[in-house]
Length: 184
Image (cartoon, rainbow, N blue to C red):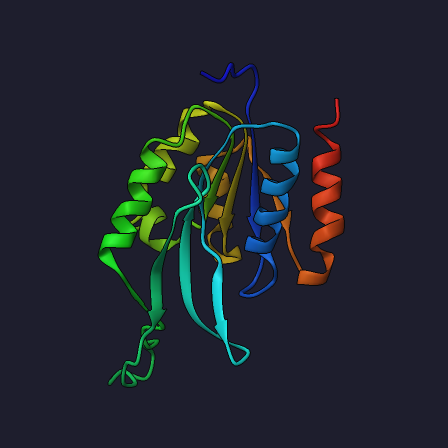
């Protein structure tokens, strides 16, 4: 079992395709190289022909990956104010990711990539990720979310530190700086 003395939370935020998941991958590599126990989920985009066509979910403890969502081919909504559904989620993969998160703590590094309106506003989706973060039974947690939900996240986890990702090109330096804080 992992001995937890103090837990920290980084809330990684940025616009779509800014490099949030890329930063998670760099942090996983860096902490793994330090011998840390790593768990949680990462949701890398799948590209074809330069276009994002799917989203996978990876169990960071086992390395198992499943297809979480594919682009939805939905007609435009009847009401002009409504947004068309962009992704069609596989309920089996969603449930599997939630189970992965249920067993993710205690750990050294917890990754929850990502939580959104489904979890924070509706109490659905990867709700076990909320519980894992609330438990604080990790040395370091990384939560990924979009900027429009930061206010909700900061209310729930006031001890969290917001890390903004602007562009993928800045990720290596950002990861190096974050990892430097754990050089002891």
